[in-house]
Image 1 (spheres, helix red, strand yellow):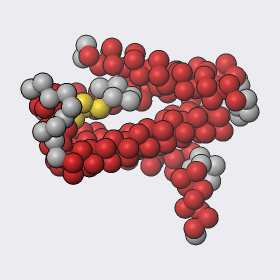
Image 2 (cartoon, helix red, strand yellow; image 1 turned 135 degrees about the horizontal axis):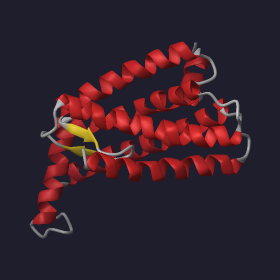
Image 3 (cartoon, one colour; image 1 turned 180 degrees about the horizontal axis):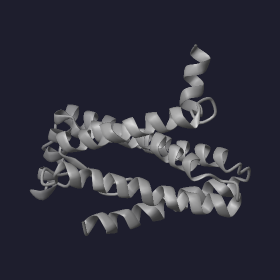
Length: 198
């Protein structure tokens, strides 16, 4: 059992059928969208989550859909270039499952305590307190802790994308992983540009 749990986090793409992966991915997509709406934040890009209370439920899902679709198409194009047998559904599953990490990051940003900490820091900076001397040591520690957790989750997202895509396209080279990371970064910028105009 312990071995299965470890495998689930290390590489969840090897032990489950495409239908199971798709079901989990679509369910997490729905949860992620509702979480953003009720938590008052938006997936402005693949890697950027911003606080907002001006978006309707439909627009939140549109932004999320664009992020998933554009990333899937970009990675599928690369996968097809590497291996002509690459299937769209496999790449989609990798993206949908990997996005559960992004939804977790969104959950952290939606926690009222974390929101308050971030707002306090922003207000301090706006008031000219660049050294953040008005922020208590405890608040600084908690903010640092939240930031560290977010960084770990972000790295884990990249890890899942690279491991998953290399698995489904049967890529063995190290540089394939580097290209995948670059594709995610470029696609993130593209999604931010598109979502800004919707």
